[in-house]
Amino acid sequence: MSATINPLANPKGGKKLCELCQKPAYLQCTKCRVTYYCDVAHQQADWNSIHNKACELLILIRSPAPLHSWQTDRDHHHMQTQKRLEQLMELSHAESKRRVSEGKYEEALPAAQLSLRCAMDVYGPNAVEHVPAYLLLAEANMGLGFLSQAEGYLSKAQWTTMKTLGCSQVILHQLHRTLGRLYTATGRYRSALLHFANDIFHASEEFGLNSVVSAGGYFLMANVFVKEEKPDIAISLYSQVHQHLHLYDAFTQNEAQLAEVDQMLNVMLEAQQQGVNTHQSAMLSHSLGQSALLSHSLAMFWFLCRDHSKALDFGRKAAEFSRQCEEQNSLAESIQSLIQEVEKHITIQQIPTIQQ
Image 1 (cartoon, one colour):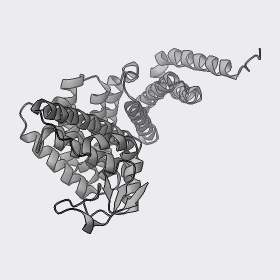
Image 2 (spheres, one colour):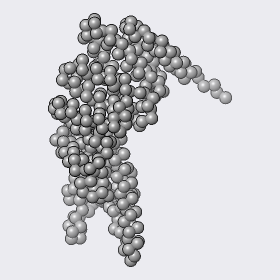
Image 3 (cartoon, one colour):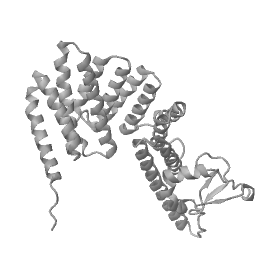
Image 4 (cartoon, helix red, strand yellow):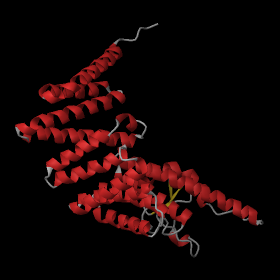
C-alpha cells in the first residue's frame, strides 16, 4: 500500500510533502503514486477518511499534464482537470460531513482538508467557496475538543464572508450556527445567543421560519438558556421548536437531519420531564401536557422510521402523560389511535412467514 521514498532523491524544487501535515514525506501511496505521507499513521488516517475513494481520481488530477502542441488541447485538459477537482471537492466534503454527523471527528478531518485544498485550486485564494470546508474543519475540531483550532477556522470563514458581497443565506446560517456552538462550548453564552439569532434569521430567509433547519436554531438557543439556568425561557423556546417541527417535512431531509430531529425531540422531552418534577401544581398540568405532545411526536417519528418498538414505547409514555393531564384529554384519542396502529404493525411482523 505504501513505498518508501528518499527526499534527497527528489529533483530540485520537487520536494514531496505529507498530505495531512505538509511535513517532508517519506512514504508514497503505491496505488496512485501521486500522494505522499510523513509516516504510516498519517497514511492510514487519510485512507480511512477519504483516500480510499479519491485515489483513482487523484491520478487524473495530479499526474503531470501531457505535452500538447495546440492551445485548444491544453485548454481542454485544463477544463477537465477543473471538473475533476470540483468532483473531488464535492466528494470529500460529503464524506467529511457524513463523518461529522456520525461523530467520527478524526476521520472527518483529512476529508475536510482535501475539500479545502480542492476549493483553493478551483476558486483561488480567499473565495467564499472555502467556507463550507472551514466550517467542517471547525466542527470536527470542536468534536475533538480542539476549540482554539476550531476558532481559527471560524475566523477565516467569518473574514471570508465579510469580504464577499451577496454571500448566500445558507452559508451565513451555517457560519452563525457553528459560531454559536463554539461560543456555547467556551461558555460565552451572550455571544452564542447573538449568533443563534442570526442563524435563525438567515435559515428562515432560505428555508422558511417553520422549517426543520430554522427550528434547529431555536433549539440551540434554548440549550444556551438551559446552561444559564433559565429553564422557563428554555422550555418556552422548546415549545416554539415543537410547534414549528413538522415531522412529515423532516422526512424529505437527509439522515443527518433526521438524527437532528430525533435529538431535538428527546432533549425537549427530557426538559419537560424535569419540569414535571420541579414545577409547582400551577405549572404541572402544562408541563405534563407538553410532555404528552413531545412523546406523541417521538412516537410518530419512530413510526414513520418503521421502528415500531420505539414508537410503541413513546406512545405509551404519551398516553401516561395525557392521562395525568386533564387539559390534554383532546390528545388522548390521537395517542390511542397511534398506539393501536403501531400494535397492528408489530402483530403483522410477528406472524411467521408461511413456507410455500
